[in-house]
Length: 407
Image 1 (spheres, helix red, strand yellow):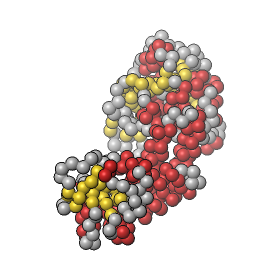
Image 2: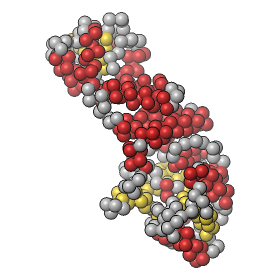
Image 3: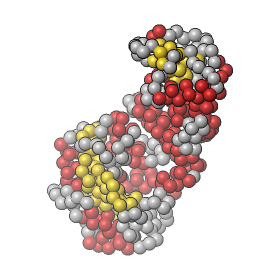
Image 4: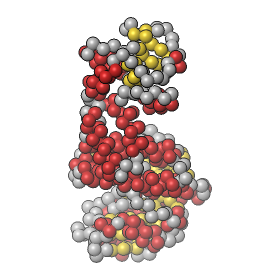
């Protein structure tokens, strides 16, 4: 058998025919089977599945549960499906999505056969929003080709569609029992340790997006759910970092930052006051048992500038050392800080820039000096006033042992 199609269904009566028709319209030379797991549907889905089993008795295998298994863990369901699969490759499509290209399996099969280095491949899809009856492209601006490490850990141009997954069966059977909040993410990152990942920029499937009760809706409404999701994400990537021998470590930190962004946006707002940002990060510190405190400290240093009360609250801290204050940067953010300082009749001793000092040597009558011209001492208080390049500047200041950095 060339390919085993894995399909999970639950109360998909409205959609399952379109899903199954997408399987059986496939053309080409590949031999495939269809393994359907129904998790005790109550809406008539099972009757439709039995109808298709009657039409294609040699192709369809039904696993029909009498009791809902999902609360017991999706891993058990998937492991059973993988153990039953006879195909060299696995293709995945859930019971409310569907394929639209009749040579999808043939094309992905040929790609994997010609390139044994590829562990998993994806293709593009359309996202159908049922309530508004609209379509949009799933992945934007990514050409066909190998997926780089950064895009494997941090998907920035649109997540890779579940219904496009095509991978080597033996690798999925050998996957460690990782604990994670998102099975798609585990599959993608684990497979990157087994071989290359490849993306095909062709729309060969449709993903249905539901507004009511969707994951994002629940995430934004339920803080406890969001906290648990973040905890599980951190736990998974901690385990995965060890499993991958640190290969993706740089990208994993960015992935954690994105997780903080999402939680902050959902439950505090990206422009929340500084005190609220501290409270937000403390919640995440507690739920992760303080194993990432250094990461949270770094996040605060970089993104505190987005707080809506940033300049006012920070100036109040600067009042403690008016004489030794320097602003790092000479752009818009530095001018905002200068304006706030002016309200308190304060002026910094100078501006500091990363490059060597060039003409002009002053800004609004205040001296400008390059970082190489400055020496770190106990009296200097540095206020980094920039958004772009802020992370690099903070690293530079720490490297040069500046102890009094205003955040």
